[in-house]
Image (cartoon, rainbow, N blue to C red):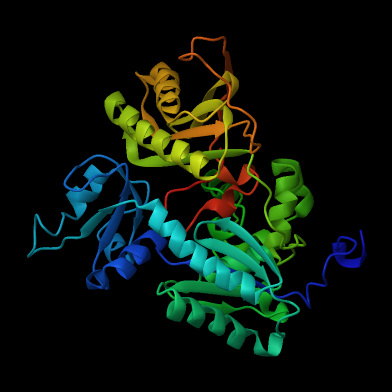
Length: 413
């Protein structure tokens, strides 16, 4: 390590300029672009949802809808209880409900990302609506705010959707900055202001801290990023392993990770939390099948074949159970994802469930032929992993990067 803990060859953090661009309520913004009459109105976009139906899960909700308690990953039926469809209640508080249209959203995202790649030397695309940009050689700290404003204005003018931008000398602080003044925000954190900016931030908002880890840190009296920065790094490492040291460094604005394009993912997943523990297995199964459809569709769009299908079930208080089944060869088979997910989930028919997720893994992006499973009659391998672990998304590599602005998570579990 070089002086100050910087990796050999890593940019000097006082010189590096990183932008985090986060599209505000992206799916809802796309619907508003398509239907200008929806601007400033509550909009709810549902996955597995069809017009007039009550099944599915909220993929994203506009800020106007969130004010009524509608949240991402919420069951559509719950959202409708809190905010009816406009057609059902045109005079009272109500929202416009739209089904997910990923083809359209990806077209819009491609327009945004074309601008980002034009304006930055290096772009790390995190998800359909989120990216990091290294603009060190494109601007200077004295004019970084103007550069970031130019990015926002080009997206708004040429694509017609809003974006929030955070500017900082490192990735984790830039991400926090982009979320600091939503929607349509712009926050610049120069190198000499990083620690002061981070100090009052809630510890749960430190990049890499999941909900369970936040609770554990609070039990240690650590409520803010400043508290985390003042903690004993050796005690944090002893308690949380290397992750503890990483979080300590990020709370102090020390994040040497370079902005690099992402490799192909190792797995793809979606998960959805209920408002509380749910004892109705039919409801849990319905949600899981909706997630299975979304995951299989995501894999197909990425031209990915998968050899393993799994589910994640979180039971009270926060125990995580994962089950997976390995296939004889790589496949692209959405009905099979549904069938295997439902079969694995049957083990938890009598359990109370707080959260459910579906994942495909052991991905292949080659052009090789798909394995023939013959109706899934061939031999498979059942895999059970970590029956009772901690529900902490931060312990999954890059999981915190996949969380988008109020949209259901695509992160791995």
